[in-house]
Image 1 (cartoon, rainbow, N blue to C red):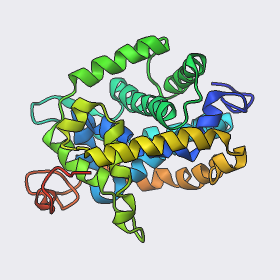
Image 2: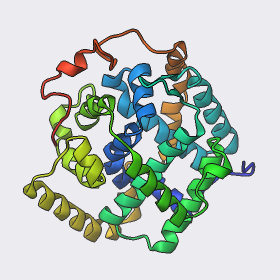
Image 3: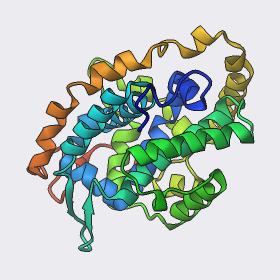
Image 4: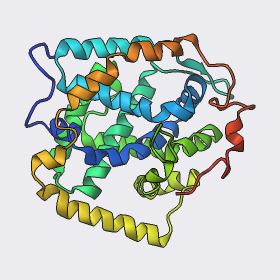
Length: 304
């Protein structure tokens, strides 16, 4: 690991990406891609309060990437070590007997890949500034993060074309589990204290549009013709306006992303250590045969 300063600084593509809130519109997409992997869906369902922790988990992942990419080497190592220890107890077995563990390098690669791919998709549709060289630079920078996350070099696609082939192969082979469909309710209708749920309604068609069509259909998400036209209009306006905004406007309120990431990730170890105890007892927050999630109004699959 770099020992003389932050991994990425001004002039790197990652520096710009981590400081622009426009990329947060891909949050729902990234989560839906992650839980499309049955082992990740099972881990989330069995080791989380799915009602309250889905988006905080995504935020913790982004915060970790901010600290690893923009923070000092010692704090990056400390954050990685804390998160590693916090997830040691996240493991179990699928219904078909297949084991899973949060530190499986292939699962770690998939989580990181969904974030990389989402950045590239959001950039293309909502900004349109990257040429192929910038995309390649961003991917090569992301490979450095993958290595720090403990993903073996042999698993990391060596270049952007290989990464695209990896994503195509993985997406084609994914089958959405019942657990993932139930979790989808809490991705497209998140619950945040003091934040009315209707405020997230505009993001549901955005997330549906960003998903690959096969997975969108498998989740039971759909777009009306009117919603599709509206999303396309938002994207066109964003591509026309955002690149022309002053930098301080484009990066507001993430002018200093490290400050927020340090505040949130600092106490993370204490907050996540409870997961080392293994799966929680059956409750409304768990997706097992007795869960009341199945009785949530609207059925197991939500429409945008």
